[in-house]
Length: 174
View 1 (cartoon, rainbow, N blue to C red):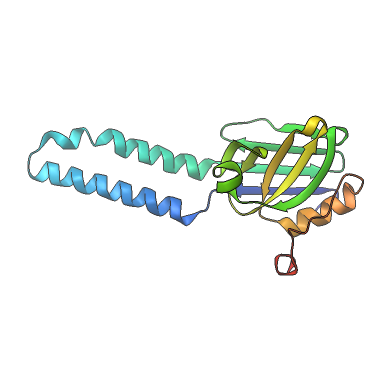
View 2: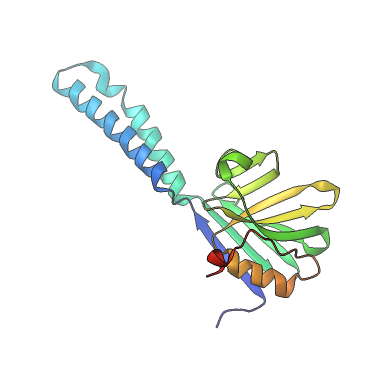
């Protein structure tokens, strides 16, 4: 039985377009290497480095996971493999918290660990996030693929800090 005093989520990069672009680049590099090998051009040895780099990027994308756990009193998050230990935010430090809709490219310049004009963000995919405002106007966004569930949890357990957002329309809540 799930713990009702806990919200937990893991997100990974699942944007198909990223993998399609990387696959096209990898295929082009392999084709160029095969051509160089068949026609005895010494280029194929130089292609090993870009192929390895593309491979490392794909492995890194697969292993990058945003972990978010919210309890009655704390928010824990980490973005593996860059951060192995949870960063912990205590409830008393939070001025307000809400679930918002955002545009990763416009607001933060993409997904991942970002600093944009709206503050710092840890996102892996999607268009919804947990917006946390601290005293002193500092702001943090944690991406979520479960906006309805996290909103319900925050309303029940963080009600004194939670501000319901108009970002969750009836369509999103269905």
